[in-house]
Length: 132
Image (cartoon, rainbow, N blue to C red; front, side):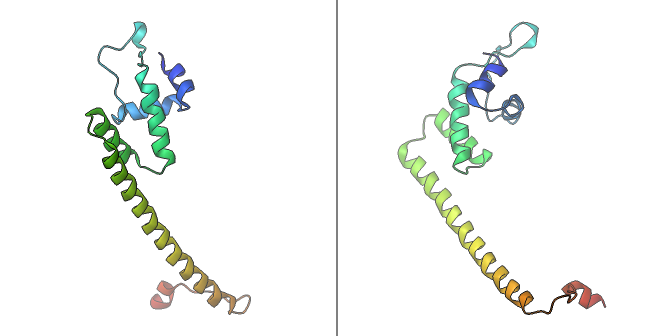
């Protein structure tokens, strides 16, 4: 199938499909060019691109997706490995939530300090105080 049809079937833009091909996230088998240099994308890429979309929606990076696709292509991605990958991702998300929560608390403290200042008060940055 041509890239336009692949784009319609997967919801990815042509540019995204080309980018994934350029970074070797997806691969086109050798000798898959039609007349006038058009590429003939195999049906299997529909399923690969749909898997990429699902992984992206779950927050996986392209590099993490590449690793999953490689494991799947060499047929070593079993349920236990996938569960371990998902658990690592969940742990990373939990750590990021903790970081964001701490940042939110700090911002709320800073806001309280600012609310205590009188209106029209000019704020000097710490770096400006040192230089002055």
